[in-house]
Image (tube, rainbow, N blue to C red; front, side):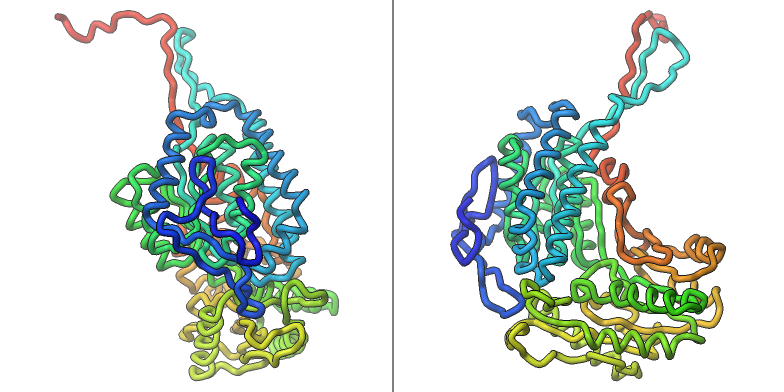
Length: 506
């Protein structure tokens, strides 16, 4: 592939081992959200490009060697990819920061996590037994359950964590022996394009890894309905996820959906009984809400705090949120970058305006910051915002804002806290802060969320399954269940001493 920065590259579609432009010749400029200036050019693929990529993946699966490559060899390739990611950490981290608007440090951490995911799934498949023996009750019968790859996997990834979310799909798919076509978000595709190059460099056979850069309504829609795709994995919003599931239904594909979240962060007064405990809970509430400008599906965007400590907690939270340093993510000292697009900022502004009209009290933020040398005037910046005195009927509390907006609700009893935390159509993640171990376990057990953090927020483990309840989606990523999504199960029954059955008299 040609150098993919500074408006030089347009051959960003990779199918059958070759980089090429879109069939139509269409291109798209990739915008730096810090200053709204284009910095790269990518191919704008459509249904024709998608069909070519799927055909390449289909041929590589049906006729190629990768599905039959021993697990140890597949694992070795994944480890080589991890090593290449470490080698290119700085370059990829900066590219991720520029593409998605996050800070360079966040970008570097993302690359570390991507490498961890490749290593984890390499270790997982390398350590597996070849099959699970089933006792058939006879020494003449050998019965075993084995795992096989699903086939051609289509992957549609979001704009907020472009490479990390792609790795959660690509690493287990390859570990299981599948081929794939990935469609990154059309506004943040650059690091996923770079990953395909690393897969090729690591020795992945042609046709196994394919990418089509382009919009969801053409590329994503075609992948979802394509008869030669065996599995569709989508991470994104609820509306788009519903369309993916509907398009996949006629061909009865396997479907994995990781959708939105409206995640509660519940703070009990006993967690704030000491100065250290208070400071830790406030600091983690800031991290939960404002990392990557709140553009995180698991963001702790709903602070649910016990009434007796609410005033002090919110005052300190707002004071510190007002001091967060906004700017271009590649600048030293910046703590929070811009939103990903003008459209996303307008959406955030709409939610804040709606909340104020419905009675919320603005404690900090709520506007665009003044321009500065670190914050170009045309950048998509928005101040970290704390909205107090919120309630469940407000749109800003019910719906996923995906921006630097934290709402505050209060409770008096444990039952009320649980009821508020569970009062959402989503069920992705949540946090509980308490000094009482019994209460921590009790409340965590009652929360209807796929991940519950106790006295922490945001960490994930490659070994632990990630996914949600309710409208947060179906299926799991990471952990053994993440690998299982990309596999079919086959029962092989072998009769070592076959004899006539004599069911019939003829």
